[in-house]
Length: 247
Image 1 (tube, one colour):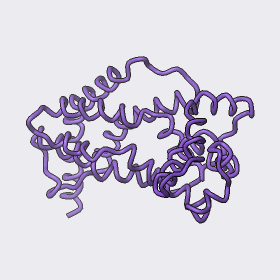
Image 2: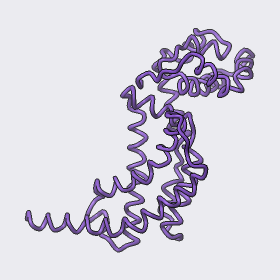
Image 3: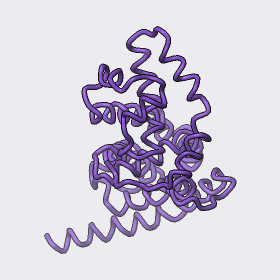
């Protein structure tokens, strides 16, 4: 997976101590008799944080040691380290996605700006998280598919819904006439990516971030709903003119 994100050993030790307050409890839990599905679940939950903090190069031997179990017990549940990482990313994808986000966007009982404010209020609380950000980065740096799948899902379900609702609100051509364009997708991505970029600053670059992220997102949303309609209208009109000229 991603290129190793190096940490000095002292930093890694400090990070693990501060980020694993329940490590001793989990180790005790694994030493007692547990149902197989519960033990597997606990291994995956711990592995998410372990790989997020140590990189995907982290050794299963160290993972087992931190859990207070043998390395062979991990391989009883997962045939390889790659299989464990696959399960970690399955959980990551599920934990940091809410199927209700698209429903919020399409609820026309509220103005579009209100819907987007609600969406990003929820989105911040789900994804503004060190585990989400670090595992996303590890997948990207290792050229694995998991981060790209997540972005693809966001584009297919959220970006298209936002673009469609903006067109409806402003009397612009529907997708049946003109499918969502790259221009529209990039406008939405610029707004949507704000949360992740703040997460990178905080948990990857160790740089300061605003104290009120909701306020910042409200400004991003307002800028989008006030400026995008005219820009999209001009963009679609230009495409229509080019098409007529080519015909």
